[in-house]
Structure formats: C-alpha cells, structure tokens
Amino acid sequence: MPGSNARAMEKARTLAADALILDLEDAVAPDAKEIARIQVCEAAKSRAFGAREVIIRINALGTPWGEADLPAVLDAKPDAILVPKVSRAADLQSIDAVAGGMMLWAMIETPRAILDIGEIAGTSGNLACLVMGTNDLLKDMRGKPLRSRENLTAALSLCVLAARAHNLAAIDGVFNNIADPEGFQAECLRARAFGFDGKTLVHPSQIAPCNEIFAPSEEEVELARRIIAAFDLAENSDKGAITLDGKMVERLHAEAAQRTLALADAIAARGAQP
Image (tube, rainbow, N blue to C red; front, side):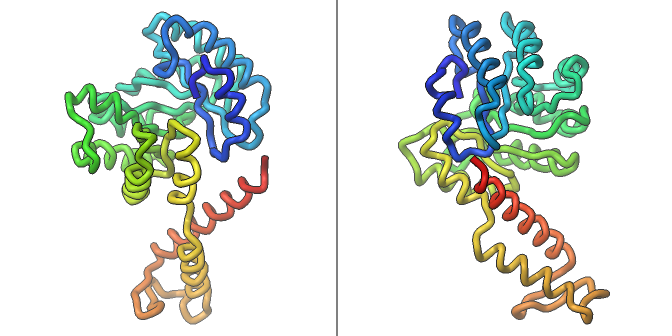
C-alpha cells in the first residue's frame, strides 16, 4: 500500500489479506516521502488493522530518506520492517543492530542478493521472511519479463531453498498486469509449486484468487487427515512406509500432512477474526 495514499491504507483495514506492507519506498514519489512517513507511522500506531500483520517498507539507509525512516518506524512498532535492496548480510546487520529485536523482512531483488542468499538468510535471528523483488531483479539482470518466468527459475528456487534452510517464510514477487487474471492465477500456481508461502499483491482484486491457491484444498486436507490417521494405527507405528489407496506413503508424507493441517487450522482461525 503506497504510504502517501491515506485512502488506500484506510481501505486496507477491510481487505482479506494476511499482511499489509505499508510502503515508504518505490511506491512513493520523492516529493511525497515525508508525508508518507507521517501517515504510515500514524496508521501503524493506530492498531486499526485487526489480525492483519503490518509491515513497513523503509527506504534504504543510503538514500536521503532512509536515515529518517528507521527511527520513525521503530517508534511506530509495526509487526516487522521490510528492508529493501538487501544485497549482502551487512545490509541487514546494520538495521538489526539498532532495531531492538524487531522482526525483519528482506527484499531479495539484486543479482548480488541471489548469489549471497544463503548468507543473507542466516544473518539474523530476527529475520522472518524473504520477499522476492522480481521487477528490480529483472532490471538489474538486463532481462525481459517472460510469462513463464523461466529466466527467473534459478533465482526463485535459490530464494526458497535459502528460506527453508533457515526456517524462514518465502514470498513471491508481484504480478504487474492487473487486467490479466488468468496470467496471475497461473503465476500463483507456479509460485506454490516452487514452494513459496504466498505472493505479494498490487491490487485488491488479486487477494481472493491468491488466498484460494495458496490455501490447502479440501481434497488436500482430507488426504492429510487420512495419511496421519494411517500412521497412527498400531500396526503402522514402527513402519517407515505404508500403502494407502494403492500408493506408497512414507513418514515424510506424514510430516507434510501435519504442515497441511496446521496451515488449514491457521487459515480457519484467521477467517474468524476481523
């Protein structure tokens, strides 16, 4: 949500999103940076967004606005700070050193970040999430957008692998063409297949299809219950693999089933809150 758009932030209180990124960086014009900082911090302090996580994306510390952003955002106490243009572990460490234990999210949007992604992901105990910045990454790669995103496959996979290695969430980048819902749906499906936990969105119309795709389906939940129940049977207690519906199912599938049910329970709980 552009921090300079007070009306958009007001509307955010009603959106069925899990998290709101109130932006001070790319979505805000240079001449609106100061008012955006004031509006975003006031919005975060209001605690008026219900169960939605509130994350503030600051400007990089090396910019004319970054040094003023950080203390103002720390005072506003959002759920997390989204740090842009993270290219090295030191980019996070400099903020972590003064953030007082506040949760950090990192934008992964430069070639250097992809090459150093493992070190970045493991640099801070306060880092909770890696967010792909595919637009900036493509620009720096001197690449062109492809509907299949095959030119980003390596970067997307490395981001997910680093997140899983360090127990972090991984969020895919934005889909720019609001007028192409079929393309958006296809990209969400691919992102989930890559292993991403969710996707950053640029328009309210993208929320419902994104939620549907990244949530476990009724069929997935039912299968997860059956896998767990099968391994809970006394005769299977010491088995590493069993047969279910004519297919081999291993203990690793039971672990995945537990994650599926936990996610379904979290979604149900979130839906019960305003």
